[in-house]
Length: 78
Image 1 (cartoon, rainbow, N blue to C red):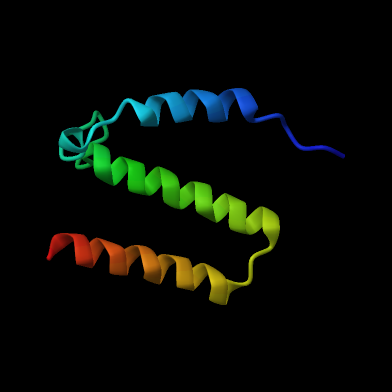
Image 2: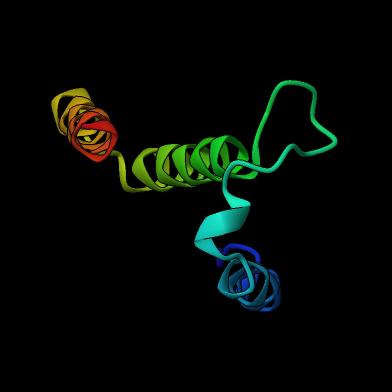
């Protein structure tokens, strides 16, 4: 049984993300305590989690992705 067609939703998200500039990443959002950058990180993390679940990615591979993302964040801060 085929899954839902997410092409339209994915295209809308891509257009939205294309419009975000680096100087907007620290701007507050309506979500209390979350900047645009933090909300994007949350969204992308959930996207990856759903993708991993659908692909039945083993936990050790998921952990690598999280470690890689955190390492990149620390590098960006220094």
